[in-house]
Image (cartoon, rainbow, N blue to C red; front, side):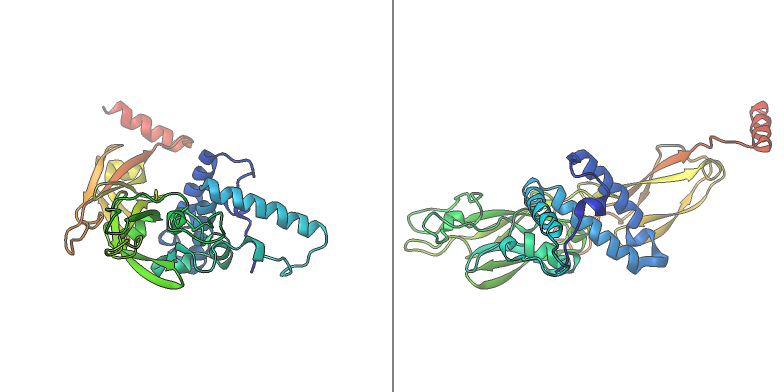
Length: 324
């Protein structure tokens, strides 16, 4: 298994604050998004996955703290003459046999490296909250979600409901995705519906705490949708920024803009103003549990004003100004 230099991938210093990390992620994600690199899509996709993985670790305080410990240990091992492939990763593996945690699964599984899945697969954040051992060395139901369990059932008969948090990308929310729950040696695949938003709860019936005399409770996955480097979401509507040159704004033209299903050509009308919103009907997010209804995509126009005019361009602008 290869070590991942997440700071190097994002191009940030080791003491970068959360704002620096987020800015670097957004900049690189825009640059290497596959839709923006159609001629080198495979290469861009691989780079985009690396960038996303690095951000998932460095943007999460718990994962980042663990990664920093691993990084220092790995650097010390290298200084003592460690050879590639010889580092002992076993002490850093998360999760314990028989435990319960939510893993990356379905459409998101292939987006993360072996290093990530081994080191962080049993931790919190996108993969849910990992299990932890009780003081007696066993795993208690109250400990299954790292202290994040909240009882919502009736304790004397039915088992308690359990809750944990999962985060998904905006693209996963658009298409729908899955997470795999590992519990007592079993693997349960849970479907997260298309159109999910922050606050959506996904119920897994009968997978909560066992009842004293009645049926077990349920397990609820509380969904958080991560920020996207390209789109801003408001309900089912999406907003994206597009920059055009002054000549296109004045004369009109065409530009390519991203959508959740690929780029489309957008017609720019003559006289388009900075800040103007152009609506693309039905290009937003799907409505939760609806097969046919979608929100809209709004393209916010920015106009690039040229700074360095040559002599002829300046003459022409002056001529235009004199005509007004």
